[in-house]
Amino acid sequence: MRFFLTKADRILKRSEFLGLSKFGRKTQNKHFVAIFSPGRFQRTRLGVTVARKVGNATIRNRIKRFSRESFRLNRHIITGYWDINIIAKKKAADLSSKQAFLSLQNIFNSISRSQGN
Image 1 (tube, rainbow, N blue to C red):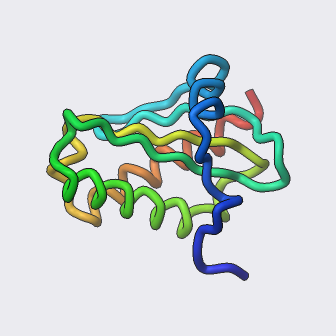
Image 2 (image 1 turned 30 degrees about the vertical axis):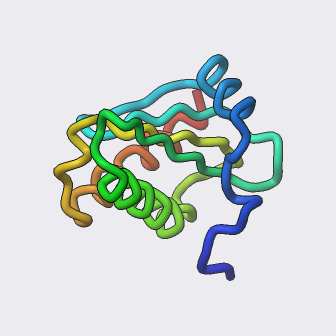
């Protein structure tokens, strides 16, 4: 079992992010928005978007680290193969790591539940 995210586990191309935002479904909570759609590959992939308005580079990188780690730890609860873009809201800047992980876990649970729909 892998314990890190490879390049193949991440959404990197702008065109893929744009396609997700155009055709994907959305779920959100107070701190994050997730846009997701069935993946084209035999794996669930993650993209993380944190706009400048959320905070300075240190804060943005911290949120991205939390998002990737939460995905890595919760990947097993996500059923099926999805492309997921996590977008941080401004309120995410003030989260502790524990709060961020709980918030993101709720997002991943929501994605997993929506598989049947």
